[in-house]
Image (tube, rainbow, N blue to C red):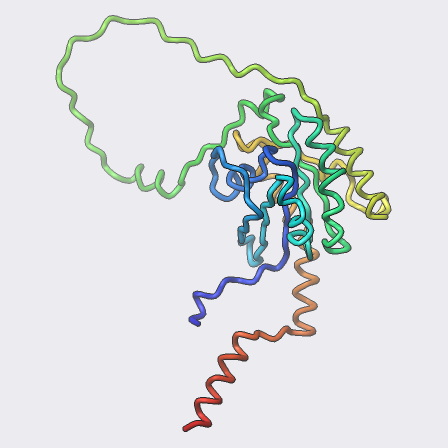
Length: 266
């Protein structure tokens, strides 16, 4: 197989867990594709490989539907970080994390990092509501500035009468926030106790609890970039272990064995 066609091996795995309709897929699309799309419910799980500097991180988007619940523990196996996602306007979505999804993380790494992400903050927070990422391509903008564009000549027409400017549409009314940051931080404390981890040796709650909006992009980049910084020690440790005990590439072994067999036949 040509070298360029081989998929890079991920250094660590990150898994998104949460009930359906909390916006896990939309968060991932906002971060990877820089846009918001209304998506359908994920079936089983979806995989994305993100290059972060010299490292490769696999991000797994899992289904929140009840019928796919049993697959969650399989996707969590060997995970370096779990992103527990809820809807800030839906208290039940937070309760589901503790009741349904936390037990699925038993197959994750013993030093797995847990983050709590309250999505749809634009529905309850005016700051998140007005925040809108500009999906601009700097290279295209620079090239368009360098090009000499001839002004467009419009046909002569009577000047229309002046009309008052229409007022800007009012912002959408904010909804009641059912889950506060304090609620998420309290759940993080219960997660540490469930995992039998000491709070004084674990990451503080305020550093692993986020509120985001996949629709406007609010805090989405900050969430993922902060998370990648957190898993960097796991990446370096795994690479160091691989250097001490390199794994065998079965595909290369089969190719070498086939080449030797072909040579012996001649």
